Every structure is written in C-alpha cells, then in structure tokens.
Length: 285
Image 1 (tube, one colour):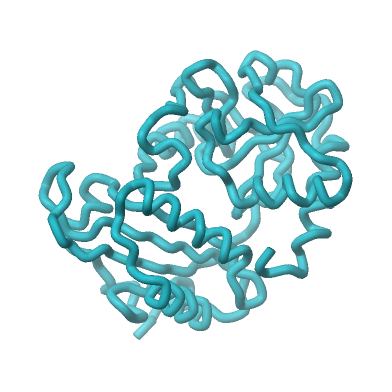
Image 2 (image 1 turned 120 degrees about the horizontal axis):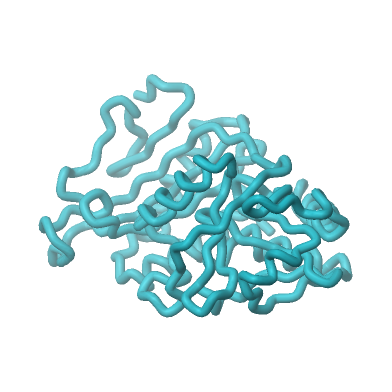
C-alpha cells in the first residue's frame, strides 16, 4: 500500500509502499551503476513522448547488454504508476538494472533484471539560469557514449561544482575540445545569427527534448544547425539555452562569469514557441 502521496513506486511486479520498497543488496545498479533509465514528464495523467523514451531505454539497455524485462511487463508498470499518480504534473522514472550480481564488475549468469518505476512531483525549471563550464571531459568514444545509464557520479560531481558557483548546470567539452552537453541537458547556442547544437557524434546523449525541438523548428521553417561547437566559441555566444524533460527550453543568462547579450534571445524565444505550439496538446509526438 502506498502511504506517501508524493511518491508512487512499482517494483517486483506491483505497486509498493515507498517506505519499505527495496532492491537486493547486491543489485548491480546499486553496487556498480550497471543500469539504464529514462525520465518522462507526466502531463494530464499521461506520460509525454513515452514511445520515444521507451525506444531510447531499449537502445541503452541493448548497448549495455542488459536483459529486457518484456514489453508487457514494462507497460504494465508504467500504466500502474501513471494511474496511481493521477492528473498531477509529475515525473515518471523508469530504471532497469542488471539485477543481483557479484561484488565486482562481472554479472551473475541468468540473473533477472530489476525493473523499478516511480513517479514524483515535477516543476519545470524554464526560467533564465546560469551555467558553468567544468574541466572534466566527456569521452565521445567511450563505451557508454550515447547511452543513458545510471553511472551518474561524474554528473553529480560536476553539478555540485556548478551549484557552488551559483549555477544550475555544468557544461562538458569532449576530448577534442568541442561542446558536448550538460549533466542532464542538451545545449543550443546562438552564433552569428544561427542556432547551433552539437551532433550526437560529440558524445552527447540523443536527448528526447533536443529531438523534439529540432523537429519543431524544422516544422516552423526555422531549422537549427547540427554541427560541432568548439568550446572557445562559447565566448562569442549571443544567446543560448538548455533543453531537457525537466527544463523544456530554458534560457541561459550567463556562462561562467559572462552574461550573454540576450536572455532570452530571439532564437531562444523562437525555439520555445515552436516547442510549445507543436507539443503542448500532444502526448505522443
């Protein structure tokens, strides 16, 4: 029985009390970060862009070599949590791990995966924000490049550094010095009157909101450019914004100690308008 109205938990095939729900002590998602996940916005009692999120979850699971729990089990869990959450704005998180395993990197043969689905409150953070660059790099050729895994300690560290500087996000370069992504966001930059975002070959996650913004701008006749952005060019940015499930289109007011000339700038305003016009009344774009 769920005794916390602010959280809904599905684990081991059914809804559980958040106060007592637990995974096995040896679960590889806990011990070595061997898992994948998706965060989905809940709108009007339904998950937004769920099909795209679940396809990316499957891509991440396949890339990590995780056993898939089965489409029916996954949808039952999502539907059960969504129904229990109700009409409130919220976030749905789907986490899939390798399940119980040895105390090391090797997996247990035949171990059943752990499927955890939760819902909680969400307030979209779409007001102007400051970001900082960090000295750590994304490895665009790494084994996890492009996968949304639970190995998030690097993001936790970078975000904590950003918050100590009064920022809400940290931006990573990749190993060749090009802009990659934030800890949980994709980045768009206004340069020479053009709106530019890094390609997935930069090592960034193929963000769902990034994808939707690109499609909305294309549909509005104002396509963005997908190309590499050297980190040095951030000093020339006229405007910029972050995109993610929990931010939508969020204008960047400052990068490091440099206030951007426009916040939100015209390209940011156009992207936000196109995104909301295309998807505010659509649940499965």
